[in-house]
Amino acid sequence: MTIVIDTLIKARWVIPVEPIGVVLEHHALVLQSGRIIDILPSDEAERMYVARHIHDLPHHAVLPGFINAHTHVPMTLFRGMADDLPLMDWLQNKIWPAEAEWVKPDFVADGARLGIAEMLRGGTTCFADMYFYPEIVAQVVRDSGIRACLGTPVLDFPTAWAQNSDEYISKGLALHDEVHNDALLTTLFGPHAPYTVSDEPFRKLLTYANELDIPITCHVHETAFEVEQAVAQSGQRPLARLHALGLLSSGFAAVHMTTLTDEEIALLASTGTHVVHCPESNLKLASGFCPVAKLLAAGVNVALGTDGAASNNDLDMLGEMRTAALLAKTVAQDATAVPAAQALRMATLNGAKALGLGDITGSLEAGKAADIIAINLDHLRTQPLYDPISQIVYAASSDQVSDVWIAGKHVLQNAQLTTLDETQIKQRASEWRARIYTPA
Image (cartoon, rainbow, N blue to C red; front, side, top):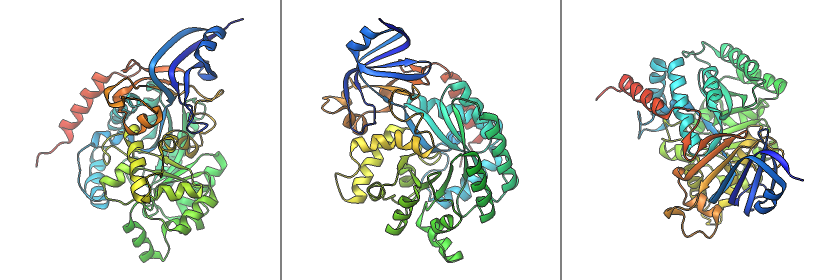
């Protein structure tokens, strides 16, 4: 007896990520109603199932989509605008003034479309955002079909979106109510950083996060200067302050974390706190080095994010994964640190766990959402092929991503976007450049 299903994806290699390092040859994924219902050898799948849609990928590795666990997607419209500057100069003298002048709903919508299109083409199926007007980003997410965890920024000072911390939080609660029943959208609270958010807003956020069971993410220990300044002003390192406020837990993701003591690493492990590593942004801003190998050895869940395109300058998770693996080896002075399979897990399942989505996405398992990508390894740069995981992490490029499914929907087909108009997106980006750019 055969079973009628929606989609059958047959591939040369299936890399489920869980268990780590496993590669299944000549296997197939069986999709029904947006979920994976079976993974089995391709010849068995053809005997057992009759599919409405069959995709035969003889030169491809099929794996879970990448999860960009930290970004500021609308900032793609600031890409390359303020390069080669240290963090605080970049932020205070370039980015914040530009945001004050330009960030409005139309900017956010166009920047989000540009960023989401880039991510889909590069195999990202889920992202965590932290930016103003998240309700606008939510609509672009719905139009594109990507999965997203949208963060509510919280600061002590006014911006175009809100005037004070209470208004930021109120708008975040409204966003949560708006998207609560949306299958592809969840929310998080995104207090900017310990140096821009005072204690009382942190306490309120923690109360609401516990009540609503949603995560909190925050830039923490991004630079040595941030830590030194906090100690000079309060006698307390930022991570210690957050711990005293009760924030460190399995519901908290600390982003960047370039300055850590062994005692702080042990604290992160004991509290179940996640770390989101953004290696390329950290390198470009000379912010420092996250001790990834030490964190992983201690049992800390380390995910990957690109940060925003204004400081990276792309949203390419394949590149981020490669940089993370290579940098970790140098920082640890150990060539065995963060092997390819671990780097891939950081870019997929670890990100899902950090966002509270580990039961939904991040690995190819029966019952999980069909968030799947196919990478064509029949390219010069990935030949000869001895180990598909190694080739994906150390050699493949984003233009080798041929297909992307999110909740079973084919959003990138044969390297063509199916839900977004790429020509229109590029035209709008060009128009924004003409408006923003001021010749020296």
